[in-house]
Length: 305
Image 1 (cartoon, rainbow, N blue to C red):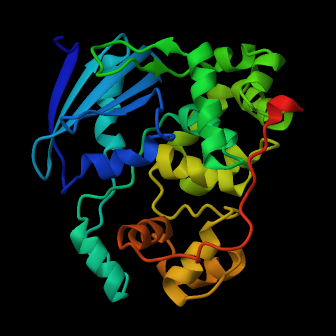
Image 2 (image 1 turned 180 degrees about the vertical axis):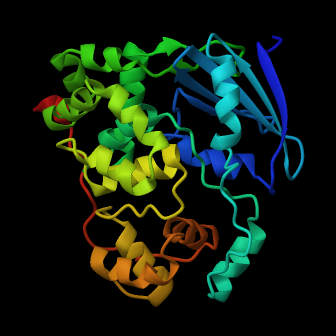
């Protein structure tokens, strides 16, 4: 099917489509994200002009083909360069740690995405609070299957567009329960959805002010704000403080020992301004984290409560 709009975009620096956009996927089977057999990344979004589906194809180290379908095609294509890390300039960046600098040289196209769609990053981040990823991803899929809209375009498998703010607010209590979402997280999503215009404005604020805008809402803390900043704001410094695994992973990867959040932040302090990038490089380098022993976060089925 011929796209409604297309753009051949040459990035100002090397850009790896799969690495950059991969952080936007919310688990296997995310109905808003598909990596096709030909390597193309498909992503659905709800713009101010309506739904859109993007197909993003790597044509060269710095050349990307962007195709879009739907009423929101023009708005989605306009935001696509930002989503692909157009503003994320790593010129001169060095960690001073040989293994991390090697990972940086080997992954020159790994950029920090900036979707500028705040609710689309915030809702799944709230779903991921205090539960294991598998559980949150299942809730996301269930809610989109029940309340999302069919994505436009010829995607390789059926895709869905997330609900609007009004759509999130209209979900009845029993449907949250059926999707495995406890009342606290459901109430937080409906609370931010009721002020969606203010939430979306955060994309144009400084990173500090954007975090402050989000955390003013009860139920949205530093961890959730950081998860949004890493996707919607393009913040290379956002650290997910409070994550169940992150401090231990960083501690073992860099120093071979457990750390708490305060120790992790102290260890990352030399890279202030680029701490999220450093964490991604630790992962890209394949540095091992904490050995697989000790307690794991349990699966809690809220539907049985």
